[in-house]
Image (cartoon, rainbow, N blue to C red; front, side, top):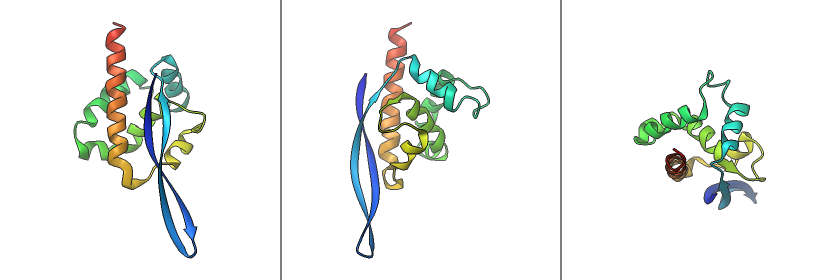
Length: 126
C-alpha cells in the first residue's frame, strides 16, 4: 500500500467573513481486490455494469487531456475513491466533501499517480 496526500478544504466564519482553511489528509491507496468490491458496491450499477478494471482503462485515457479530465471529474473521483482506504472517508459523499474546486488540478494529479500505481501493480501480477 502507498500513502498519498489529498488536499482538503474546510470553510469557517471568522466574524462575518467566510474563510477557507487548506490542509491535507493522508490516505492509503489499496490496490487489492477490495477496490473492485468498493466499485461493485458503490458505482458499478450506476455505470451500467462497467467493472473497475475497464473504468481504470477509460480514466487512463481521460487524464491525458486536462479538458477531458475536468469534463469527467466525478467519474475520476469515483475511481480514486475506490482505491482509498481511510476510516476518515467512510462514504463517497465524505470524500467529495473534503475537496475544493481550487485544488482540482492537484486531485487529478493524485488520480494519475494512483492509476499509474494500479497499472504497475497489475503488470506485476500478469
